[in-house]
Length: 222
Image (cartoon, rainbow, N blue to C red; front, side, top):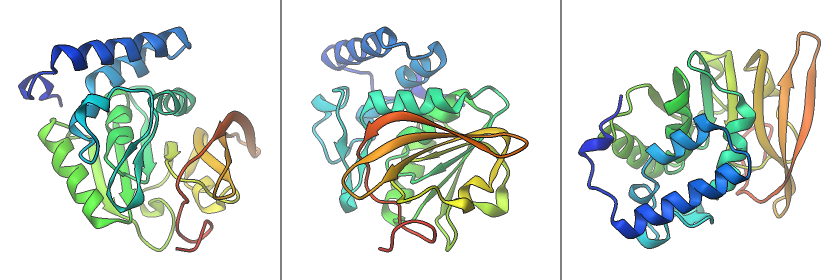
């Protein structure tokens, strides 16, 4: 899967910033699998609209079309909440730069990622193919949220905020699986973990967050 070794090397300054960030995540209790994945994935090569010097700051980064790469601490929390393993099938809603999909793909068996903005999806696929990822499928977002034709998924991660929990995404989650999604208004949300049991769902509040709105049926209008 990995062609990371053939990529341009990190500068000493960026390597130091990345290592400091990973140390911070470790001190916050981030799992070893997530830290290993976030160390592997080259955030500096995905943040095309920001100076590379900021790539490993613990902050969100701008993308085109008003989108962002999420703050690393939030990415770590969301990834850990999915409880991924080497056999997991993952759905990533909102490809953006491809950063979250790549991190999940370092841990899981396969990732399906969907994006409604063509330019972002095309660039993300180009970048992640260069990095050597072969277990990620890139799809154009359809009328329905997610990828119902490829369900069920063991884990679903949503990088945009919905006003309420979308039933259409819950229905794509396998029993025993986890869905992580921001829920709230357009300004403030709660990061929510949804665990699907045999008899229903359990909701766990992971704390406050702020994401761009999720567009589509069961979410916000454009």
